[in-house]
Image (cartoon, rainbow, N blue to C red; front, top):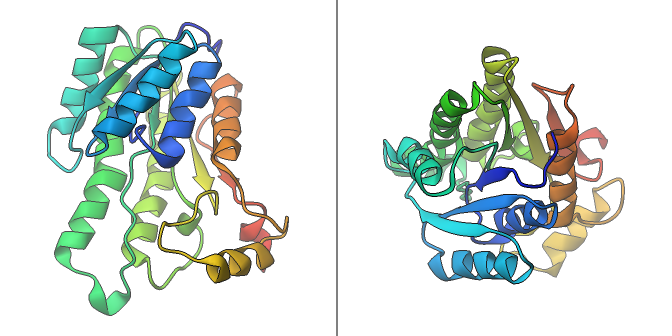
Length: 243
């Protein structure tokens, strides 16, 4: 896919990795629909940064925990900005939930945002993409391939994203390609300290942490690789091969 002039919807684009993805795609000449839930100020900053560099960006608020919100979000973007060429499902909820502490509310929140919302966003976008083609990129997680005892619901939801990617790639071909990226340690949780960081670095074969730009590069590759669909590209410095 040629990227300049195309419209991309990026969910969770107001902060952290989602913001990096939005700004990285804008730097390649794409127009951006920036979704956010609670981070209004940050979403506006992201749009303003893109506009200052000559890009086109608009913001869209939606609580993806709510049934019906994904389809409404897609419809709003199309109504205001035109046909969507690319969807990047980046919005996610990650909570530390040791097995004895998991509540039904925690489970429902993670699955609503991490798995249900990306599916229904893809469903709505694909209906509009079938005539002109398009690409969907889901952001999974290294937790989909490993067992993290303190993050079991999160890992299960992200494993579901990997399987959803494979299934949608087959169901939506040939008009729509569907792939995923599974980042490892590219941004640490805000409450982690230097000891946590050192532990991750020591257990990563490349002996460093990643950066949001590493995720952006992987997404751009998948957008431009026209013969790739149904794949999940792990971006983790080799952590998944360390044992």
